[in-house]
Each structure stands twice: as structure tokens, then as C-alpha cells.
Amino acid sequence: MKYIGPDFCNITSLLTDEELLIQKTANQFVIEEFNPIVNEYYKKGSFPLDLIPKMGELGFFGATLPKEFGGSEISSTAYGLIMHELEKGDSGLRSVCSVQGGLVMYPIYQYGTEEQKKKWLSQLSAGKAVGCFGLTESNHGSDPGGMLTRAKRDGDDWVINGSKMWITNGSIADVAVVWAKDEEGIIRGFLIEKGTKGFSSSDIHGKMSLRASITSELFMKDVRIPDSNRLPGIEGLKGPLSCLNQARYSIAWGAIGAAVDCYEVALNYSKERKQFSKPIAGFQLTQQKLAHMIQEITKAQLLALQLGKLKDNNQLDVSHISLGKKNNVAIARDCARLAREILGANGIMDDYSVMRHMMNLETVYTYEGTNEIHTLIIGQKITGESAFE
Image 1 (spheres, one colour):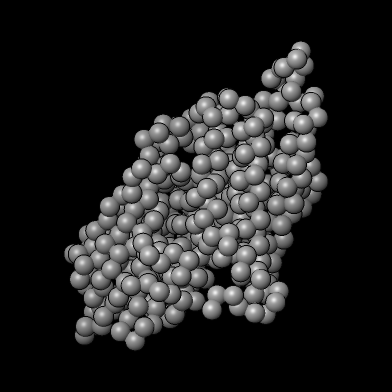
Image 2: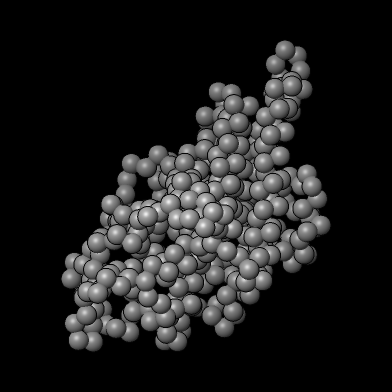
């Protein structure tokens, strides 16, 4: 069995048979279940909800978690390969998976009570329940510590007021992991269940990017929840940021999938498209573009593989994840542009996936930490000086 995708430097030799099989499973799911309908859902700005339980059956959600909590205990590299294949289909498809696993299941597993774990993790891993993550606000994106959402203690309950913006799966979520400041200014995590009085959502329309994904705004007006819905294992900004690191790792892998799809579409097209009586693949400028794409994809592959090894050995630093997210999304964005150039006018048509990837990657470039924020995280690591203050 071989690595699915361009394997210029024999990536196959660095993967186990189990990892290759997991990648193949995800690849087949995308080809058979998602690709035939993605344009339909991209056009109407929605997501095929019936795929969520199917993804759960395949073990895509929270796959690295222990089996007792619904996970499969697979390697971080194997999980990354799932993200690779899902985003090869569409960034929206990968987002559903990385949010469910990294931003919802992870904090419940890492910081939740035994009761919270028993109630939610098996349901979320099976895709029988959907979760969302509420951190970003309309005026607080790169500066989440400035959040205005407040949680006030009232006896054995908490009363939460505020709103959250740009929330994947917000309107379909059965449970929301919401971060709010208490009266002492300490950031705490809470589980707010769908149907709770005062808790509502509204989908965001008019997106030109990440259209095959549900994006919402969350509203909390005197939402009262018991203290048993608080995540007791963490206080402060470290809580939500640790969750974001899980999702950012997913993106470092997923972006490669988008880049690979753009590269393969462009390569195949260049071999078939003829101008001046020969395939455009035979022209130097076309080869220059393709060579640049495979060069950057190969470097991104090797970076992601190393991140996976570091993660499994508990040696993965925040700055490593920032490097992966920053680099791999940037090269994917570049590959999408070059692929569109190779396809010419056909590159803007939905007969090909290139323009859809190009539009999606504009979102991926910005969310889960902008390129600038990740630059400063890396800068702080190598200089020892913080540029955030």
C-alpha cells in the first residue's frame, strides 16, 4: 500500500501499514460520499448533515482519544492523514471533524468531569451528537483574552451573558463549549446544551468562502446552567488555547490535502490540454509552476510528519504547531493560485475543485490564528521576546 497523493520523496516509507490503511479509508469516504455532492452544498451554503454519523462510524471524531471514551487510540500521524483526505475534499468537511474532535471532545476529555465525559464523548465520537466551540467574538478574534462574554456565579448555578461569532456548526450543535470570564476576570469553560433557556443561534449568510460549512453566531441572554456544566480542570486563557492547538495541528495536515488536490488537478489538466499542437505540460513555464507546487507540498508533508512524531512523544511545542499551520496553509494557498493559472479560464469553473479550494483557503489562512499571529508566536520562541504586549 502506498501514500495516496504525490510521493516525490517516498513518503510511503515513513508511514506504517495501519496509517496507510486509515488514509485509504478516509480517501474512499471522500470520493464516494462527499465529492459527488460537494458542489451542490457549496452552492447552497450548507453541509450534508447525514455524513456526520457516517464519519462517526468510521472513527474520524476524536480518533486519538482512548477507546473507553470513544476514540480509536490511533497515532497523531494517522489522524493527520484523515484530516489530509477530508480537506482534499473540502475545507468545510475537515472543519467539521477537527472542531468536533479538537475543540469539543478534547476539552471535555482533558478538563471535564467523569460525568461530562460519560454523557458526551461516546455520543460525539459516534456522530450522534454535534458540538461547537465558542471563543471568538465579533470584536475579539486574535485577542480572545479581551472577550466580553461574562459568567456570574449565582448559588449552585452560573448565569452567562454574551455572544460568540464565526462558530462552525453553531446552529446544529447539541452542546457548545463556551468560554467566558467570571466576576474575577478568570476565563472558564462551560457546556451549554441546545435548548437551554436564553441560548440561541443564527447562521451567517453571504459567505464567499467555506460555503460547504455551517457558520453561526451564538447568543446568551441570562443563560442559567448548573456548576456541573463547568469544565473544572482548567482556568484562564490556557484552556481555549490548548484546544486551538489541537485544531491547528489538524489544519497543518488538512491544508496539504487541499494543495495536493489542486496540484493533481493541474498536473492532469496540463497533460491533456493542448496548445500550439502539444500538451501544455511540455512548456517550461507550466513545468516551473508544477515543480514549485511539488517542491512546497513535499516540504509540507515532511513538516507535518515530524509534527505528528513530536505530538505522540509529547514534545510538540506551540511554536511547532504555529510553524505547521503558517507554512502549510500558505503553500496550499499558493498552489491553488498556480493551479488556477494552469487551468486558465477553466480554473474558475466548478467542473474543477481548484477555485473552491482557493476560496476556502482564504478562510483557513485567517481562522485558528491568523498568519500574523503565528508569525509572532514563532518570533517569540526564537527571540525570547514577546511582540504581543
